[in-house]
Image (cartoon, rainbow, N blue to C red; front, side, top):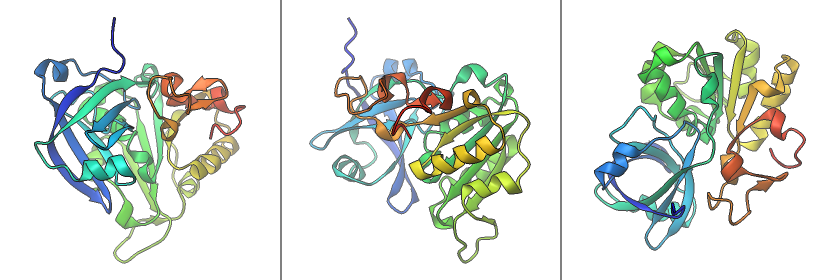
Amino acid sequence: MKNIYQTKLAKIIDIKKEAEDIKLFTFKFVNKKDQTRLDFTPGQYFILSVLGFGEAPFAYSSSPEEKDYFQVCIQEKGTLTSGLFKLKKGDKVGIRGPYGNGWPKEIFSKRNLLLVGGGLGLFPLRPLIRSVVLAPQKFKKVQIFYGSRCPELLLFKKEYKLWQRYTDLCLTCDRRSRGWKGRVGVITTLFDKVKLVEDPVVLVCGPPIMYKFVIQKLKELKFKDKDVYLSLERRMYCGVGTCQHCVVGGKYVCKDGPVFSYKEIKEMPQAI
C-alpha cells in the first residue's frame, strides 16, 4: 500500500535571488531513481519539509521536461520559509508529492492559451512557460499577461528574452519607477491595450483581488466560464485532504484542485 506521507530526501543544488525576500531553489533527489521517476503536471504542487521548522505546500516552478532537477520559487514569509532561507547548497530537505490537479494539459495542443499572472502568481505558471520553451511543438499560440506592483518586483526577468521567442509576453507595472519604459497600469489594462490571441483558454494565478477584476474583464469580453481556469494554491495545507482547512463548497483544494475552471467554483462562496 502506498504511503501518502512518504518523504524523500532532496539536495539543494542551486539558490538564486529573484527579488527582495524571494529565491529560486533548485533541488535534486538524493536517490537517483526518485529523480528519474519524478513526473508532474504544471500547476501541481508538493510538500517541502525542513527539519526543525515544519512543512508547507509549494507549487513547482520548473517544467516536467527538466528531468535532472526541479525548482521552486519561494518568498521568505513565516517559520518554514525562514528555516529554508538559512540553508545552503548541499543541504537537504524533505519532499513529498506531487499532489493535486494542475493546468488542463489535455487542451495544450488544441487551444491557444492566455496566461494571466499577478505578482507571485507567476510561480505556478512558470512550469507551463518553461514547457512551451522546451517543447514548443506541443502547444499552439501562447500569450502571457504578467503584472507586478513595480519593476523591481518583476520575477524571472533574465528569462524574458527567451520567453519572447516562443510566446507573446506582455508586461505591466502598477506604478512607474526610474528606468522602466514598459506599460504602466494594473493587469486588466492589458486587455484594453493588447490584441488578444484568438479564442484562448485563460489560465489565471495571482492575488485574490486580481481574480475579481480579471474575471469581470473576461465576462465583459464574453469569455465562457469553462474556458477560464484559476489556481487556488494559496488555500492548500496538508496536501492529502486530511486537515480539511482547504475545503471550499464541498471541494478539497488540495485534492480536487488547486486548479479549477471558473465554471466549477463560480457559485461557491469565498472560493476566490
